[in-house]
Image (cartoon, rainbow, N blue to C red):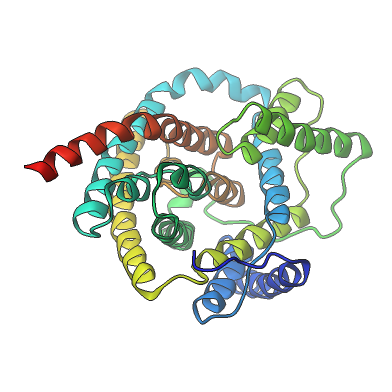
Amino acid sequence: MAGQPDHSLPYTMRTLALGTGGGYCGYALGLPLGWLLGAMAVTMALAVVGVRVTASRSPRTAMIAVIGLMVGSAFKPEVLAHVGSWWVSLTAVGAYTVITALFGIYVCYRVGRLAPTTAAFSGVPGGLSEMIVIAPSFGADIRSVSMVHATRLVLLIAVVPTSLGLSGLLADVGDGRVNRTIDWTATLPLTDTLVLLGCAVLGLLLGKWLRLPAAGLTGPLSLSAAAHLLGLTAADVPGPVIAVAQIVIGATIGQHFAGVERRVMTTGIVLGALLTCFSLGMAALFAWGLDRFLDVPFAIGLLALVPGGLPEMSLIAISLDTDPAFVSLHHLFRVVLIVVCAPLLLPVWLRLMGAANKD
């Protein structure tokens, strides 16, 4: 990104306040994931026109941990009975990831004319946060990588839940209605509160220490899942906290569009849109196969496949009540696959590009 963003407290508070206003509008309009989409739309639009909407990482880190707790709470004891049957769909995610990665890298390199390393990290369907962390250490242009992945993330978050809601496909996984009401008086017993807080704090520390992919999410998620499976708690995260999580995550997405040169922004948006269209088409094809041969409802299969961010797609699955444990596990598998394989395969890609340039 051009320039050094100011993450001071006043700007953070202003960004979150703007996001709250946008989130409430999205909620009032009855949009699926309205708090997130509204916050994201407002801050993204302001960032594009030059208004500073930067924010500290701390609120987002805390809310990603909350999402981990929410996803972990879906791992009830009865879920274990189904995990053994998910290997086929996980294999499908692996195949889908390879296909979309090859297409994405080719498009970024040939169409976008990005440098080989930048094209590699821009084209793979990894998470935005993970790619931003890994890409600079290999010499990739972080501005281009950020723009491509941020555009893809924004489009997927905006299109997928809205399309599923309008199409009626959610009827296959419930009554077809998305419950957007929030019980603002919801509370948790002290014991459950302490267990969940312990899972969040210890999960963040352990996730970083163990260097887990998307550690801020997977650490709390793992401990929350263990706590629910062991019967230490059966509590769900209250609705108001979920709304706050959506606002914070939506508001902090917008800052990725700030301070970017017009050429980089245009190229990133075009490439991001192309990759989104292809990945959505392939996800729909694979989701149809999962529905046809594995009896996985199309809506759940689609959410498990589309390469949005792990925290964001987990939150969408929770909000739409579409088997968040299944969706999150498949996204986690994709992220792990990318994080592990991308650095290992990058030298091979660079050697092929070097040989091609010599010819």
